[in-house]
Length: 98
Image 1 (cartoon, one colour):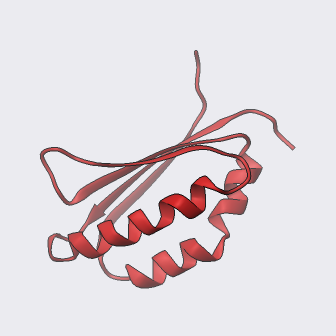
Image 2 (image 1 turned 30 degrees about the horizontal axis):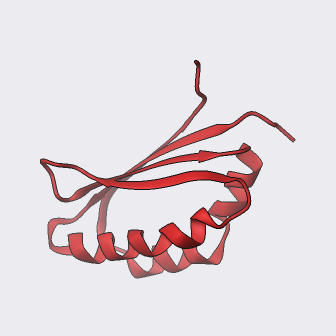
């Protein structure tokens, strides 16, 4: 098992008419995720110029613990609740250089 910390940057672009639904569902993820094993931080941001654009900045103790998070039921509930409401989703797995 890798012991290197993993940074995740997740970019979520909501359809304009579904923005509030997506925002509400993203907010629901925060407390549960922050309580998960391996979560260092899980911070949601909304773009200052494009209200439809959200970004999660996350750090995890290991990639394996992040993968466990990705298989949790609260993410499945989010996916079901926002089906068809997200225009674009881009996920970056990153490693801090310095």
